[in-house]
Each structure stands twice: as C-alpha cells, then as structure tokens.
Image (cartoon, rainbow, N blue to C red; front, side, top):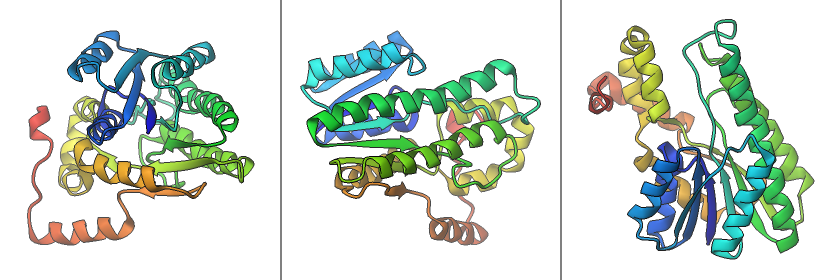
Length: 262
C-alpha cells in the first residue's frame, strides 16, 4: 500500500507511519518542521519512507504534497488526515485569537482541503481510502477547556459523514478514526501549562491514556481492512473505559507521565 499521513512527525501520526512502514508499506509523511522531517526520513535509510514539508492550511501546498506522493510512490491508496492543533487549557473566551484561528483553519479548513485533493485523485484512480482523525468533542460531549478544539473535531465528524455519503459507490472509502486519549507532545505541553489541574486528574489520566505505539498497531490493522465507507475506528470504547476504571479501584495504575517530566 502507498500511504500518506499528514502531521506524521509526532504522536499518533508518527506511530502509524512507523507501524505501516514496518509492515512493508510505502509511507509518506508531512509536517512543518524540516529538521524533524529530514531526521525521520534519514532514520529509514531512504527505503519506502518519504517526508516533505506541507502546511495543510495552504491549498497549493496540499496539491504539492499530492504531486510529491505520486512522484515518489506512483499512486496513493490511503490518505490519513492527522495534522491538527489542540489547545485545551483555556475557555472559549480565554483562547487567544491566534490559537482560535490556527485551530479552526488547521483542523477544519486544512483537513477539508486535504480530503478534496485526495478524493479528486482517488476518483480518477477508481479506488482509495481517506481517514480523518477525530478527537475529544467529536461526539458532542463537552470537556472543560476544549470548547474550540472540540468544536473543530465535531465539525470533522459531520464532514466525514457527508463526504462518505457523497462518494458512496465511487470506490473511494471515507472513514473516521477515534484514537482515544493519546499521550502526545501536545498533551504533555498542555499538562505542564496547567500543572495543578493535571495533578488533580493524574490518576484518571493514567487509567485512560495510552502511548501512541500502543494504539498504532490496532489502528493500522483496522485501517487496512476497512472496506465500508462511513466506518468509525475507535480504540477506546465505553467498555474498555469501564474496565479500566474498575481495575483502577483495585490496583494503582502505572504512571505513564513521569518519563515526560510530569
């Protein structure tokens, strides 16, 4: 398979890229940090792994990303929209104008542009899969500090459903991914920014949060076998949360955050 992953230098995007590459697929990741992109590509020895800079808020750069992927891999079988920004320590009114605009234009406009560019290509091919990474708030549930971010992910949930219906019967599959609570660089940054609040919910976070490399194998397997448009791949089900909470009443969970200086 030839796979494109936006926002593929960190977190779940990078973990998925590593997992697909280890399985023998060709992978292309994009991001905005040239040094990180070069280091990641170099670590793979130039074999079946490509990296390029792309700001998904800019349509011309998304089109260049598509062209580069075709140049390197010949076709695109799977396109995963993972790039996004999460600022989750402030209320809606406390969120800066810059953070507001960046979250909305990256998470919504950027993802929509990627979907449109990928869909046009895949319609011409007659096949392909597009997956959008959802997150907290995508199901409409409210979380403190996530008013703006959650709204962008709620929007993507609707958009993904709409696109799946519009492309029904075309050979292009549109799916959604709910990776659960992943410990990413952004999560660590937000925790350090509001350390007192994090310490209050540390026990709960240790129960429900996972490392990217723990989740990636399951998500990759589900992405590869998905053949139904509109499908939602979810790692952290309600049953799984309930079981973890019950275990937490009996056994103290492993601390997953100390390694990050928390």
